Length: 174
Image 1: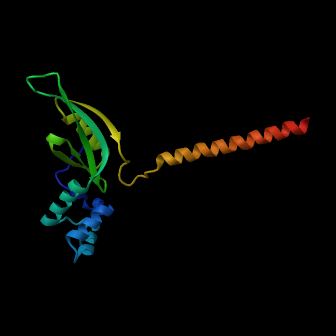
Image 2: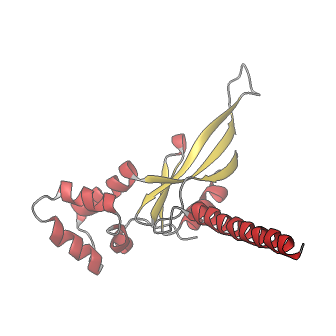
Image 3: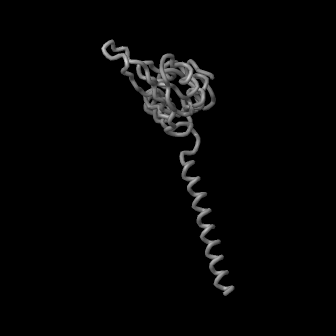
């Protein structure tokens, strides 16, 4: 598991994401193209660029995975009461972070698997359920399910043709 301290080493990945491009255009309207080219080459962002990128990831990050944590409610009147809250894995451009309500944010991670592993290992005293996948990792196709449906449809169409041929063959033999 590799948690990163900042996005300095992977800024070239971030600029693959249209949300990041729009954020850079908005923050630096006069020279945004030069900055994007620098980042694509792997040049490190300067302080204000780094702050802007980290804020952008946290504020505009897409949800990828959702866990639910259940911790004991320490209300003296009802100690059996439990709280259920969301633990979200969000990110942009293939860079992810974990947002856990009162636990704050953690990360950055270069893979969804690293972020998921972090959640399962770092929530002491909390029962963690999940995850439920909201979307596939950045860069993977969204419509994996629709491809499965298309394969099934093709098989059904072939079965109908075969059934029709069998019926015609039986009729001819009579």
